[in-house]
Image (cartoon, rainbow, N blue to C red; front, side, top):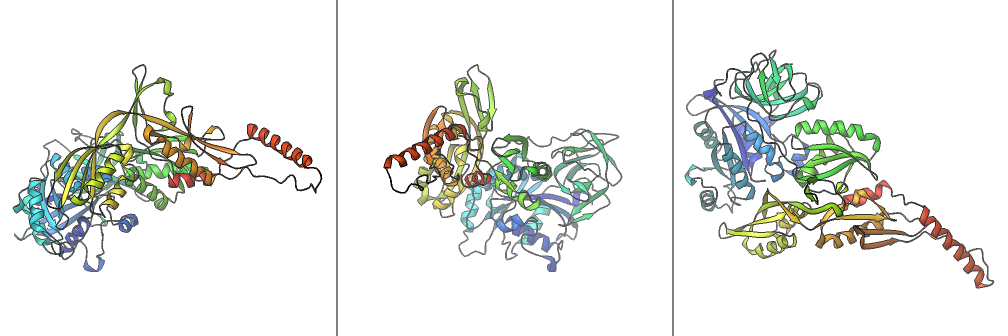
Length: 597
């Protein structure tokens, strides 16, 4: 189809504002999916997405729509995730579009992630069409949603389209707005092919499937194209689009999105953000994407050490489908060989682990998550540390800098006191309090990344009874009094339990871990000391009592000195055993503690 009749758009919103339901309605209204094939969350292909009711992966789909003017238009939609941990997925999708539908829940109004996604779209110079969704709800407040649209996002309220994706209200108006307001794609003016790789996945039969948006030229089967990142030249075997299932096409032209296959077997040969060029007459490369930096690190180990190679291969295939994931090999004295993985956040980490278990049938255990610290040595050299095991000796450290985030928390006015208490407990500083409307306020605060890793989001939800929302962005590093907390069992350091914590919280965490270890370490023939230590100072201790054999059972009466003699002899033996013996901690104990820490 000619470029003038093509529209590329994305759907952006806060989590649970109705993006996926709206995309289902658009597919149904344009006849892309027949009524008998319709189902809820049609574009959410993973079981995990359907179970949790969240979108994890961006999904491209091509629709043909006959507008009111009687002409046919090709609408290329990319459905995007709403959670903060998948913001990179959103930014990549937006780079392949000219417009974006901004969904706002009529009952809940503008939320933290709504604002963040609008900023992403504006950065890409996209035309934004606001859609006020769920207008059929009894407690929908349309005037307030329009007011917030003008006050917070600075988009005129009269541009908003009123709709209810669930009831099918306003769907026609949304499609007309896309045709009228989203600009048609324009060629870049280069001499030959330019196609941006915005995603990819692995197919058992076809190898690596590359998702592309054509900016210049065209893609046909049989063409020889170049992948600049790997320097490889490959022949295109198949070209197609999604409806939402893949179907083959003769070619992909300027402005169209779709997929290509080229018998690429290794995931390493394809890089998301790379430009596909004509091998004989290469044009200039497109800007691509900003390199993503992981925020959270965790070690992932196979429960059965023989599965290490399988884990490595599974992770490489998963990385192809999730370019924000990074990993490298590491080993632990307690857990054997594994991978040190970088994630964008805790939900991202949880989803990756779940996908490894489900899609690749891997039995895995993850270590306690940590962030990347910067350590300034006494000689002025700075180094990055993402694993507490690699922290230099304290005598060579001048300052430890921890990553800080700028967090935006939107909550009901009555919960502001409790949330301020939570932020201060997490070592955060509130910079600004802003009233959004009569019911809600937005707190802007700086908070250490380490503190929001585990339960911060859950606690916001429980304090606000589910009405609170949070978004964050990296905000540099600042010096902090961080210490390395080691766990010692019978005097030996267990590296799997080492963590970097703030000095004020070290004692509490040490006691908690020691108590957990006491419950899971089996009794030995001698007494076992479990200690939490910072450097050479012990800050907490628990003791696993010895398994005692009754050596006096054979003494029937007689002088008490005979029993004492036997007990003294046993005591000497246990003392000698303690100095020579080592405590063998079973794998199950590590798994139990790491699961609950």
